[in-house]
Image (cartoon, rainbow, N blue to C red; front, side, top):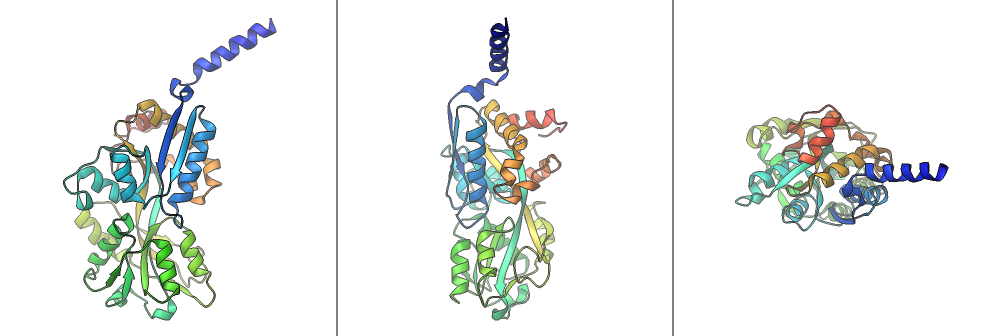
Length: 318
């Protein structure tokens, strides 16, 4: 009698599990460079999906960041990608670096705000954006979303042609600052970013983040309502003398439009239900919330599988 009850319960449980969660599935996740925030987030996401969804094996790949991830996902070479919303919009609409080649992308979820860092040190004498004129400035690695946003900030201040541009990753930028090869660098990422933390902790270095929130209005006028004003608290990086007023854009998780609805649904459901596991990897995951799931923040249309999950939570999204 008891055995029959157990067997019936087991059968009922197996039937209740979505079919997609019982299939073997390998997922590739485009993350970012090792010194940034996307990389640990991608690793955490891969670990949670592999552990929590039976039959799934997810792997996070080191990439150049948003632009690389959008190309990989859009061409089917990766399944999931982290991206800044402005770069994702350009890829979807065929703008800027994606001119003439729209990519079939959809948003799974809005993650957390990406804060633009304009980083220098007190020894350079740079105290305001205008002081960057004539200086050696890294605008991010070639083709990165940091470069895209950095150029837009510089354009807003009329400085696009006034700085001596270098195109370095965040790790390369920090090393170049330490070696005196550049005077400042741009980095768009979550907080804290490991590479910036490293620079701030360097003996004899006093870090300075340059305010640039005034650029937001001009950026939105030219590129659409993608950016907002935000603050990096002085407690984030050692040595900051004051809070930093900056330009911010949301980060999104993107997939190809042809991803099966059940797969997209399962990813979103698992991420929200296992949020504490992800926060343990990086505290930016603590920002993940239903409140931020809006069409404005997402930039792209939501995938139907994601729409289904959010509808169950009372959200009507397109």
